[in-house]
Image 1 (cartoon, rainbow, N blue to C red):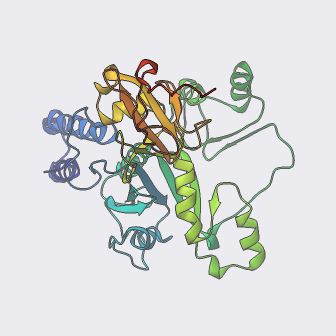
Image 2: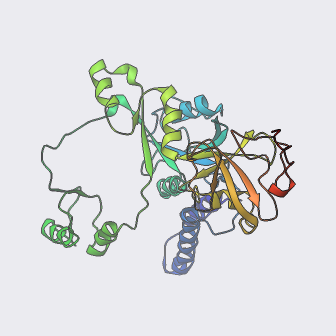
Image 3: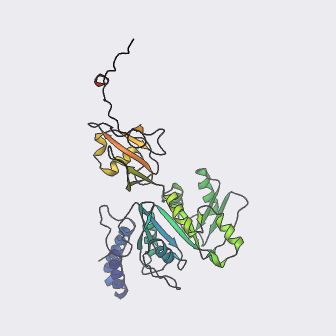
Length: 367
């Protein structure tokens, strides 16, 4: 039984239980169990298999992308078009209630695409669903924010400074106190919006950066219902995509994936199965490349030969700290091996003796 099903059962039991002094202890235990389960959804324990239903999706492939947006903006349709996975779509809201995965095959890599429910308070069973969506999104490499072009409102600010707004009455902080705290952190241009009656400590936690900031690409859907002027305005927005063909290229660019091809000694490179690296997933150095193949390989490496954009000449002798670029070719030379066949474009055959003393002496010139 998955975590979500356990939460549903506990909530149902709480609904059936009458609230009185005799049941206070029992209800308290049930609330504690729900709190622990929701914590597991946000921060899964290390070494967990990630199995089960709902949002417990095991990581797969060389990268993970999350589809996030309000209900009925076209996330399920986009998932089907990109991956071929059938995600239920309808004209009413909240069609998708769980996390539906799919796989994108692009540039010899496999990218996991997750269709998440719309982020709306109370969108599905339990108030923790919105938090679960965010928890899964935080485990992704990039977020695709799918927006409905017919429901977008823009407001430009001519001047900077600090704008302060709240959607409710604040009892713990006020505008003057927030200004003083921001100035203490030398922050002079910011937008502050309170949606809950937060305390000073809560506000400081936000400033301190106890949040995870992720790369985000805005994907505008239903642009056929707006005018050409609005389309032009959206197209000029940063990190925005309106064209389906451009979407995959933009995802690839923002994720920063690096394909490195291996070259066995004395053979042509293997361009069928690249080693995929990323600066956000371990790094893109030669050492990271070796660790990706085997964690003990670094101990046996003497140096590597690199062909590609990162090489100044073909091939270039590089150390473990060399940064690799996309589509580089790497040949590992171990300490007990030679680099025979590693010269030239990719290899060079020569029958010449390796040592000077073994060279054939030429006949003396006739006089």
